[in-house]
Image 1 (cartoon, rainbow over the protein chains, first blue to last red):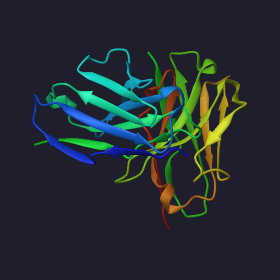
Image 2 (image 1 turned 120 degrees about the horizontal axis):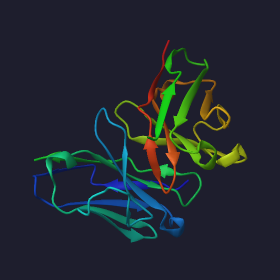
Image 3 (image 1 turned 90 degrees about the vertical axis):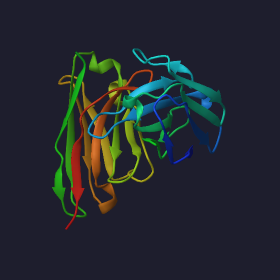
Image 4 (image 1 turned 135 degrees about the vertical axis):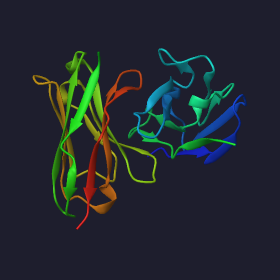
Length: 108
Length: 116
């Protein structure tokens, strides 16, 4: 099983700041098949990025993904109030699929 | 409008069984992989299982393999999760989600609580 380790566990930032979230895989993710999701309490998770760097339909360009192999990054260029949430990475290149444990982005 | 709606959750004793259902609408259900994902209290998202188009391939996370069975009925646009030998650690909200380029549509979830 491919273990995904996200860091940091929690990050405290102010609106307008940049968020950089990391996701490291225990083995190379085939074809860089890695997605990022945003999850807010009481809502369903929302896909932001797929295939490491492709934005999902309707996702603003303040969200960007990068990386390959075992190291991936989600960047939120300028945090807005609605961006404070938990972010998960998920790999679907290796079987079984797995999620990271999540990074909480909270208001400083 | 794409929608997936889960049902079937509830309180069950350890060792018991439950069957979750997920009814899909607004898209050609038979053409998509479908998945179950869970969220336990205080924990992160945990992928449970997926099934391919036609149901010939079913993959499970290690912790549920042999206890849970995913299936689908394309005639009624319904995804199922049969859960047997339930344990306390299976307590979670269970989400049904469509696989497209990623998990692009999710239901609101159904709560499964395993407790005596």
